[in-house]
Image 1 (cartoon, one colour):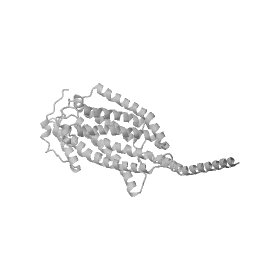
Image 2 (cartoon, one colour):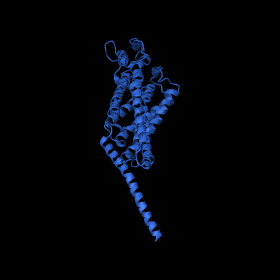
Image 3 (tube, one colour):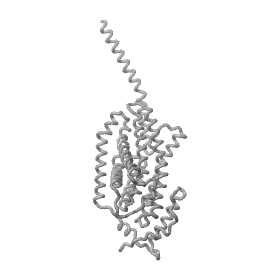
Image 4 (cartoon, one colour):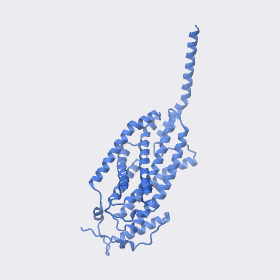
Amino acid sequence: MAFVDYAAEDVTRLLPPHNDHPTFLTLIPDTYTSWMATRASRLTPSGQWKNGYLVELFHHFNMTAFEAQLVILVAVLLTLARYWITKFIAFPLANWLKLSNLNRRKFPESFWKFFFYLFSWSYCYHVVFHAGYSIFTDSKTCFQNYDPQALPKVDILMVYLIQGSFYIHSLYATLYMDERRKDTWMMILHHILTDTLIGFSHAFRYHNAGVLIIFTHDVTDICLEFAKLMQYLKLRDGKIHQLFEYLSNFGFVIFAITWVVFRLYWFPLKALHTVGHSAAYFAPTAPCMPTFVVLLWILFTMNVYWFSFIFTKFIGVVFKNEREIRDTREDEGEEILDLQEHVKDAKKFPKEKTATNNNSNHTSKKDSVRRRH
């Protein structure tokens, strides 16, 4: 079946003026208007699709076997790197810090994720703000001069290589390396969705929008893993260290703030609005755009779902006077037992020290008596 090209004016003539100042009240109406205009341009006067969905998909799909193999290879290397870092750095460090048994088990995962997200998001931040793009400050430029055949610059391709490989690794890690949580299967679905979005946006050259989406998400993971690391460091050597509890609480507050600002505010008003509304104005013939919009709305729904965990903890801290900041997705019973064990050890510690001192004094008295005789 021959592919029928779309005419840009078939979309633009149906559109109202572009909304340069989106709000939550206009987000859905703007998306719906652009969606209907795009849909109408794909139909013949008799109401038939000019091209079938699969015809449009495969006609514009631009991903080589080499690119897929490279991403998988880097994912394998990341997995091997995590195994090496866990065995030779994270576990020895956890033992040296004398963490509790439970926290010693959890520490390597957060250690790996914290430093990976810190590196990857810092590089993404550099690309967004210091590489000559206006991806964030003027997000509609994501689709200006759009070319479905052109590859972006190397810096953006590097963001895609790092992120695509990491989420393939994360799919394996969630199943075989990470701690089991209440939302493990939601995390698996998230990793599949994320890799689909990365692959989809690469194949159809939506790279600028893809970088914007990555930028508005990964910063929250840095804050989360920092808060968890500080929480693990609170219980060390049978004692509770208050400094790390304060740092953990601080990390949680920053995590909650960044989640609201980046994932629940900037992501919908920047990325969702750009893809769902602006793309119809600046790239009206972009292929399979409705599919990309749907996938992003699913991702936004997941962000709202995970915020329920954050909000639950916030309510507990503010209104129920909970002092313990912990990941509510994890096994609460196991953490309570671990805390009780270490509080018990902390109470025993001074007694053991006193007993040792008494024995030492008793021995020195005996030695003194022997010396006198």
